[in-house]
Image (cartoon, rainbow, N blue to C red; front, side, top):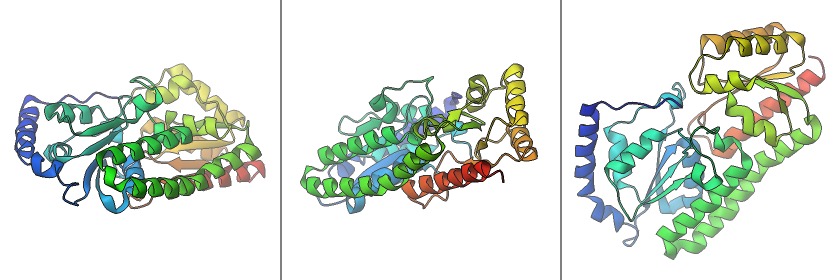
Length: 307
């Protein structure tokens, strides 16, 4: 991921805002004891949707990155974000370099009583690994269980409520995860391509053979130019007909990825669009995922039928 460099003036401004917000933290930290909601901040709306469903009426969740027209890799924080983090009882980050801007904000206003979950750390990933963890159903399951434990630790009086919410969410998540299993059963081994590594975890879970050159998809995800040899290989894969479906990231569009999409269309290869963040933003995580998987399943069916 691209590391964003904060200017001295912006950092100074954020520090001032965080200090001011810190003066109000005593009230915020005692909110659960007085019956008020836990203040939760999620760096991205996919984790925000999950923790919101777990917390239900006991939490107030703010998701920072949710703009459908922006590349989350390029996100730059602001003073409003600093205030939200400073007042939070609980923060959920993706990690693995995906939201390093959030770590900067947390370091400005450390707070021992504030819990922070970094999903990458939970699942054993680090910066440099594929950061699109929410596309791995196993990681999602691990994350929601940990989120539930953290909410209980912060608000032990509502333990039974959070446990009920966890059971409800796990049932809801089983719908899209069962669709992944169905795709694997019907289309396992099918060769597919993707413009970047956002699809790698899901392809593996669904038993699909992601044949795109790793150097290409990793470079695009990092915002770099892929090696020319990887571009040629990708083009040959599409032209030869060995690829049955192309998965295209709609939030990291470049002239090169657009040309790859056009080449696929020219060779009658179905194209499936996926996004980095939940779109539309008010949709639940599971409905968003299920919709994308339905599009993938339809494309695989169409390819199998030669349409």
